[in-house]
Image (cartoon, rainbow, N blue to C red):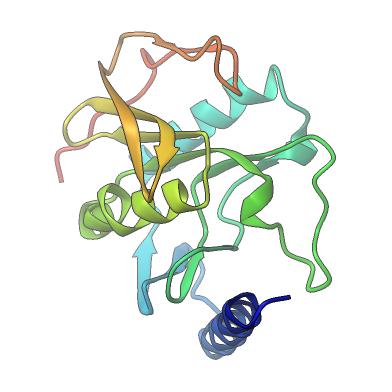
Length: 195
């Protein structure tokens, strides 16, 4: 191991330890709330019906193709960057993925992430979380925005960003054939939100 690799490894361990301590201090989380740490800032957001309806719709459609053991929702996964512990709305981990020694999934095993926009944390999903997913080389990132009635599909992660972005209006099908998901995601049941 080179000196640089050793320093990077130490920084990653320090980052994980600090995230562990921050999450421990946030326990117990009030019922009906989701907690994430994005670039060292804590975000606690209430679950809303619209948000949950879209999340569940995506999970049910994915469950037709993927076993439940590969589908995750609101489960902490640490991502590259300074203090990024996300509880993504929907995550698909690769076949054969297993928990690490601390009982957590690893970003290297994530193949797909979907985030449903909440008004108070939308800037994270479009900004630092998208950058962290790209840095982790998550091949497919989907944002469902009930305020705009739009979905955004990001593919081809490269150098902390995605090369390709496709915009789809609620009600249109999202053709993900040929991707790691390899299915058509229906959005006609996705509700809109005004607040």
